[in-house]
Length: 64
Image (cartoon, rainbow, N blue to C red; front, side, top):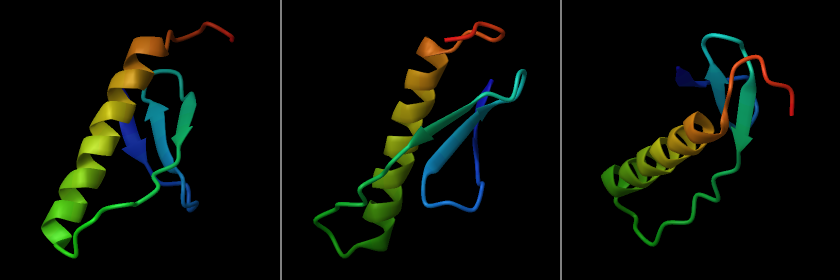
């Protein structure tokens, strides 16, 4: 399972809960709205896409 984690950096960091492998993504934060709810929704959508990408590409125990 891939989950969002925080390592104290500005990166969006995801981690596999089974093997501990981390995946880093950079969110540019570019939104054309001052609406905080829309900005949060945009980031949540970004994280969902990152989780989907990491899940599709990750195999526990396989070195790349």
